[in-house]
Amino acid sequence: MRIAAENTRALLARRYRNVRDETMALAAALSIEDQVVQPCEEASPTKWHLAHTTWFFERFVLAEWQRGYEPVDERYDRLFNSYYHTLGSMHPRAERGLLSRPTVAQVHDYRSRVDEAVLRLLHSRPEDSELSELIELGLNHEEQHQELLLTDAKQVLFMNPLETAYSAATVAPNPAGTVPLAFRLEPAGIAQIGATQDAFAFDNERPRHREWLPEHALANRLVTNAEYREFIRAGGYAEPMLWLADGWTMIQKRGIARPLYWSADLEREYTLHGWQPLDHDAPVCHVSFYEAAAFAAWAGARLPTEVEWENAARQAGPIEGNLRESGRLHPASPDPSTTRARYLQIWGDVWEWCASAYRPYPGFRPLAGSLGEYNGKFMCNQWVSRGGSCVTPQLHIRGTYRNFFYAHDRWQFLGLRLAKDA
Image 1 (cartoon, rainbow, N blue to C red):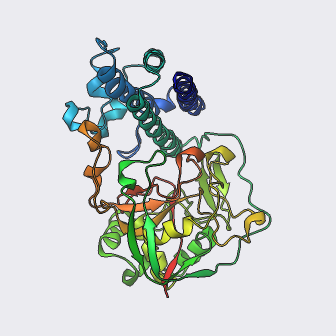
Image 2: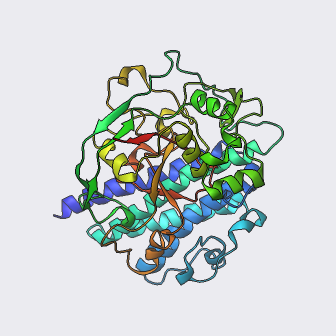
Image 3: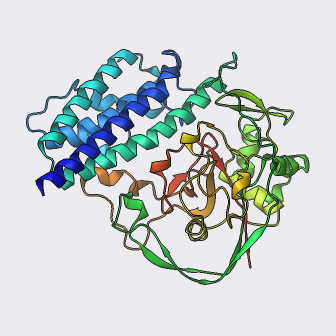
């Protein structure tokens, strides 16, 4: 038993180092100046992501599990708390970009000191499953922030008139073109939804339960840039009958007439590799829920429910696709070798908007203590998205994973798949 516990500890320690090192590697592509900018309230500075993920381990692991632990700097508890009101006050989210101190170098030192303490603690308690589960939660939390780091960096660099790129690589279009759009009929029946207790999952993915699934049809692939551009040119942004009332108000008030990061002539798109020609066959991304719903209405379809999506994900095979490990960091058209699959692009490329409000599953119970603020309190006024994106780590995503955003959000890699009633 002792040997098994030590092996488990060694695996978790290796995973801890890998995740923490990967976050630093993603940030290293940015200049120091890039890492302190906050271009909008939704996007946090890179430096803040580096510090907040470290604060999570210091506050929830070291402060709770290591007797007599002294924090690196007590002031960090307020600066890098995100939204845990039960732990005290926090620096306003919209003002994270005003924090010139601590410096990036000081944040790096903070990470190193906390990492050393966490690994020492893990080594001293190899058989403590509760501690291991808490560290695994922290690592999944950090993987979320790795994705946010890239998404937010894209917003930072896009706002700079020097047209700087995160990566110098070129996004090459798929010469094979897109796959014809087709709808797959799914029969009615009882669907098992949600995560089991067999592996890690967030509390909002549980409990596993049954839901009635009406007969429906789901598109075999994501909506492309070319299809969305046709919607624009057909006057989709000028037709109020296609839009939810709040969505129509939003696009009128903000002057929105195309996806975020598209050029005014609809020929180019800003990517993490800089400005690139619009790839007609790649999935459209950076559209709000309102835009996705309007396109679906124009196309004579609708957005899928999250139950429909999860049912399809079970048929999609292994979790592989255009995720962060591909290095592309931008949505792509389907791989020609996978075109025989029933559903394409389930994993990666873009988070897929679902016509499901983010709400608790029947019997939902949040995590105990302050960690209960992690998901449950956001189950209002947001919409579910599924499947991960081109900047999501492969090991982080699964068929039961529920992401959620406000209907107006566009800064994330958000796109859509069509559905129809049968």
